[in-house]
Image (cartoon, rainbow, N blue to C red):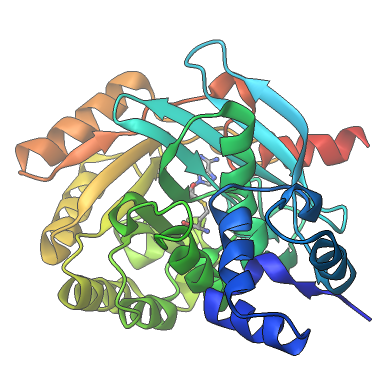
Length: 345
Ligand code: SAH
């Protein structure tokens, strides 16, 4: 029989589980605290539970813990990239970035990805499976344990399409921001999507205060279709409607992610199109010089072109940040570390 994944259970669900195995309700709160606040790695650590209860838990439940099989530290900026092994042997990657305003962890939401973006390494091998809530939480927990530092920001921008794993994503966000767990502020969580219109609307209904980042990368349907197969399914007009809906429901401003590929989407005309779109939904823009992936043909726009593009947006009154290219020297782009690890094997 497959054991219950105890770390993915909400507190009310855990209370029910305790009742089912004939334990008192308050044990659930103790267990929850050990898992989500004290970040215990083993039932044996939970010393305010009786030995017999700890044994019973080990018998009934699986306690998901991730192990780092590889850690790379950037010499340029201290960014750390972790390759984690999941309980079934699959691998995902997470990145710790240190900023002045605190530590930010970028986590994966799936093993692989089926969205097929033409510049991305994560999607090259297709989708293996979605991650459980516990596996997403554990990326944050394992980084916290390893570094001893508090994580203040979490971005769901690693491997996978988070909105293609909606139920577990929502559970993950609620548990991560719960005061009985790490209690990270919802406003410090960003979820990035390639643009699944119905799912953006669903997320808007969840009454959360998280930031939504939309990977736009092109200002016309035509350009977007060149780069992202998902653009065949949803038009930019539909996407902008979904963004406006998200903003109205949550009051949170959207961020557009825009990866600049040399000679592809970095002309003046592209900037003008992007400005129009950003205005229409009050979006911030985050520019990222594309990170070249060996199997892909795209190269980053030159430094001057990037600066000029950013200047155009700013002159138009759009808030445009240039994402610091952190961890370039350590397979920084999505899915590259996992992919290179697979190849070596
Ligand atoms: N599937 C989600 C989240 C994961 S990708 C999404 O599409 O948003 C996180 C961000 O990195 C996205 O904006 C994605 O388009 C971008 N990205 C992927 N590969 C990249 C590369 N090689 N260079 C720059 N950005 C890249």
